[in-house]
Length: 324
Image 1: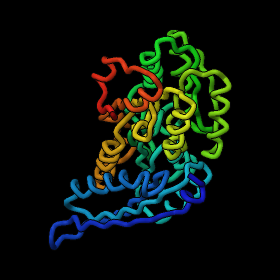
Image 2 (image 1 turned 60 degrees about the vertical axis):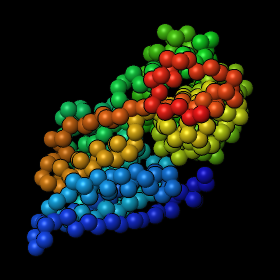
Image 3 (image 1 turned 45 degrees about the vertical axis):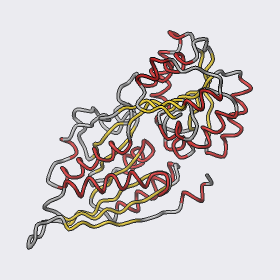
Image 4 (image 1 turned 180 degrees about the vertical axis):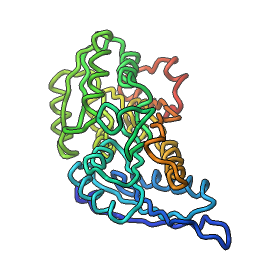
């Protein structure tokens, strides 16, 4: 996907008359939601949050404006700064968005969604007591999630010894993810080979380097870039015959082998709950950061067969969905 295709701002506004007949809410809340990708790739998440807000609302009027951005930290910071001057509450997706909002030092309430490790990257001092103006929902359900992804690959390929780690340069998720992987890899007899990309344009050369390194499988560090480029990553992994594990079910739906990660629609609905509470008087500082309520495993049997792999029955049994 070319940057110019996703960097253009696309706005959509939705207004719901949620007050009872004859009543006027004390304040019309203008909510800005920032997502990374396009309407085609992340529009369903914007719609899910808006739908849940409509279900929750009964005594106020809310206007939601959506912005779709390229997965670039500089673009994120610039566009969030501009949007913040037009809204009362910011909903921002992904670690890139959360970090950009934190760096700007915004005074308005911020609900971050699908952020890898908000404490470790400095968004909040603790999950239980976020303080300040930010709170929200994490991407990882636990600190050992990346270790579990590595274990899944080992389960599928018992002789696995060499695993490439695809990561985006400058992504704040990377240090946290690598710590988890580096703790677990020696216990599994696995050596890790990190490979960085600065943009989706680097993926072809990155996979050529992975193949040249002799890697037997691939772990994909979750982030905005790897989400936006998930179809290309899945295609290249299959072309190079690399069993891959991602945090995104979308990668598996596009042809990747397996994923372990949260349900983004469920996260959007959780985020709407935060917006509703803040609109009704709660402060972000007093709302504990939540983890995803649903974590799912997706397996692509068609890809497994193309790679000549037999997925263990135990993994198939615990998968939330098996793509035939």
